Image (cartoon, rainbow, N blue to C red; front, top):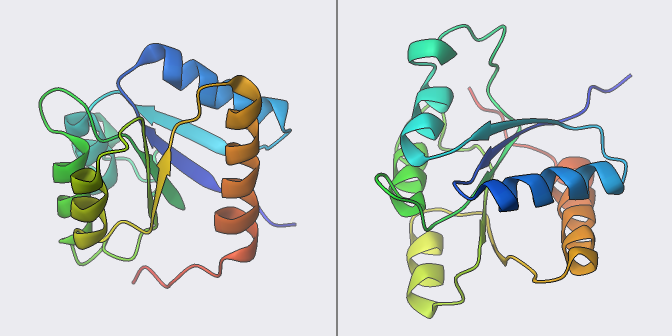
Length: 147
């Protein structure tokens, strides 16, 4: 039996966190979702630092859903650090943001983002996005070796 994929959701907006988790539940996806509420926490999780040092309890995720607009260390910086680290550079990172700014898209792809999605406004549209992300990134896509 294949284990459900592990997702790290990096999102500072509590309402968006709830919406995304509810969307995964609604489409009956049994993925384990860890939430980092800011860029600093995301980097600690990914690099196994501080309270995330125990990789048995906090294994590397299979995919990262990353918001861009966060206070402190923003999503662009998180993405650069992920893609700049030998042990993380192949980790799929999907930008999930409300920004439609062409500059944000360009900078994200230039920094190694695997995909760029704009958060839908309606819950029904959000369900479709979550289902499509799951279908492609967690079922169809053959992940690269991380070592």
